[in-house]
Length: 193
Length: 193
Image 1 (cartoon, each protein chain N blue to C red):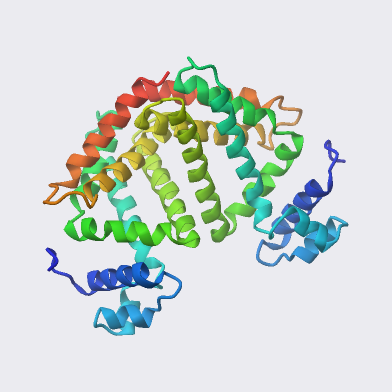
Image 2 (image 1 turned 90 degrees about the vertical axis):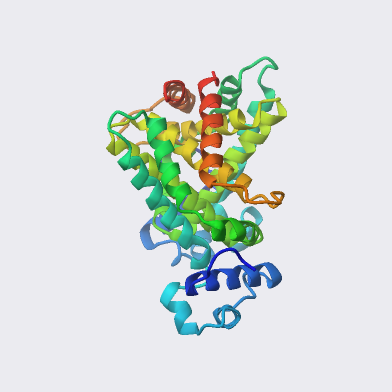
């Protein structure tokens, strides 16, 4: 039994990712997704524009959280502290639903070139959104770009360690993992030259 | 008159980018590209698999040059020095053909979501190729990732300054621009925390 209480949206995501894993993204129809979720096609279209959106809706929400966190950091925070606050805000919203489905989502994206392309654009977009939020705090262009790239890498690294299937018990909060990944990257950046 | 002597491949690229700018990527056919280049469709297909490849073939070649440069850096070079050698190798291959068509290429990609997605995947791929080349030199994972991201940013920033239309005379070598961009990013990274 899943540890999260699925609402309609989550049931659709879980059904879709299961089907993508079993029979591929291209072979899966909206009708099949709705059927497995025990919902109607029109409920599907109330939540998602198409089946591709299942895979990208979360990333858009994530960008918003990251940018909001950066904007909300104390005015005297350094760029990296602001990025850390952004990661904390975004990480705090991720639940065991995200953790359990993360590996399926990843597998679905990796298996399909069109999806890999779209995913890459979203990650480029995530860095751009974070860099903009940093520039709005008065951070200079190059520092904003570098800090944003480190933020994206930290989120991805932290998430994939958190969601790794080898945890046989509750891995705790995602924030712990993204914070550690950011510290690692920050140290690496400081020692580069 | 162009300052480069176009071969068939370059004529196809120039014709295609001109058509994409005038009438959009989706509305342009291979037959039209071949016609404008005064070549046959079968010559087109000797050089490119489809019209999308016109936009991405260069990026693949670029990744190879960056990785080769990193591999060829002296064994005791720091990660950033290795990245600098990679940038130098790749920058040295760019000619006025690339500089003159760069803005058209950029415009064609920006105008079309499918192309933006594909371009994003290539830039994620470029960072991955550079990070792999650094890891092969024994650079630790996080440092390799950060150095690779800085390398990609430096190439893009340097190229776009070099190709900027405001130069009313020869802007000199691309290497000057990518080196300056890398120095900027390296300083920004060192001062982040």
